[in-house]
Image (tube, one colour):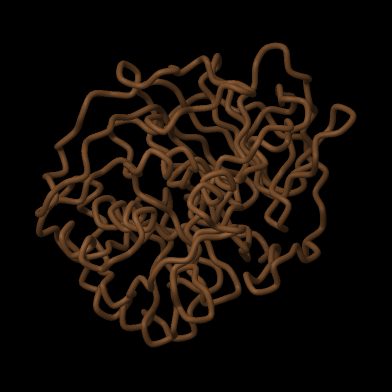
Length: 412
């Protein structure tokens, strides 16, 4: 499930567009990290300290951000799915260990996830939602161009014991690291990062650091390994995070400018048998303009060849299957967990890559193995009898539909 993506710098709300930046091209089939292709002059800028405001103008070609927090869980719905306001008690009271206690060796449990009640990632798609007027054309494009979720040569859905976005939880005793930014940063020039933390090994170089005491999530793109008290990044951002706060909208770590913690599949969730939030995926190309919850209407990168076709950044795709239909597929239990999340919460398009694979993004096991601990995703795959990956059944893209952005925005 490791993201093998291709990203370019993107336009901030109301800002001028920078030169295109062909950055990460790491095809899924290549199974390895290709060299970074940065085609812009490296700007020597040290990341400015970020405010904890609900929005901050994104300079240098990216965006603004809002926030993140902990949220509740409800049981998997029977058909039809519940209304969008059907919610359970918050994780701040029902999930142990609680916010503020996470650190190396004490990671968030399955019941925790980072966004608050107003987050689009925690929105339960209602029965009979308004479907986008573009839905039929977008799904026809996906099907016609043979896009498919992660799978083997036979088209069967696969779950890999990898991941793509490591997450680190800082404490007051961690080393201070000075951050130097190549392109655009709205993150502190100095921050605490646990010793041993490493960015994603593919060319994206994603790295997320969460400061629980300050209530900040720091997302970085193309980060180098913190060494000798220094780290260099191409982009970085700050979004609020904490118990009962934040939305996950904003950030500079991905093309859709949503927080990097948003939508990640975690090994602990799979082991618990439930994923109670929307997922995130990458696609080969997008339309010119983004949709909500992307925090801007800026022009997308990796534009699909035919105008008006393909998804948008932040398009919400839903697997249009009922609980009983998912059970009747005969998919293995771990895959049904993923499919139920796709049906109940959907999956947001957040970035592009250079293949037809629609990668469902997962937390990188570097979150754990960087400190000598077992990887949660690899451990889950092994517990299910897999060697490196699990193989299920195909997920038919013809069963997808595109939800109108007004639905999760709660404006229709």
